[in-house]
Amino acid sequence: MGWDEMMRLLRRREVELITGLSRTTLWRYEGDGRFPGALRLPGGDLRWLGGDVWAWILALPSGRSKARARWENLAARRSRKSERNAAAACADEGSASAGLGTRPEERP
Figure 1 (cartoon, rainbow, N blue to C red):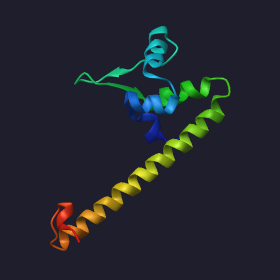
Figure 2 (tube, helix red, strand yellow):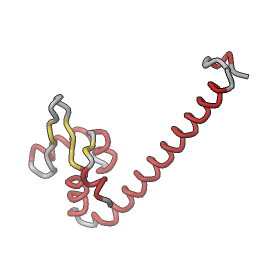
Figure 3 (cartoon, rainbow, N blue to C red):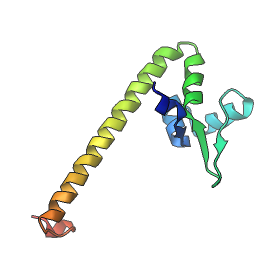
């Protein structure tokens, strides 16, 4: 786990994916003090510090193996998503440079 991931501010949905907790359980654990508290950003959005979330996971019994599996799964998802985004950008750029329309019915 790198410094970037530890200092990254995570959205609630990301915290749910990483921890495997539901929204209700997440709020309950946070209210009981069993989970790190969220930070309130100036716009009112809530974020969790990535390092706090991963430290919580590692502190669980058998947390290291679960954290490793979740980390690898999350990294694979991000990799696939960035590959799809890059491929889509290349496809869009190619059709725009060929002078083709952007609507599907205008494409060959």
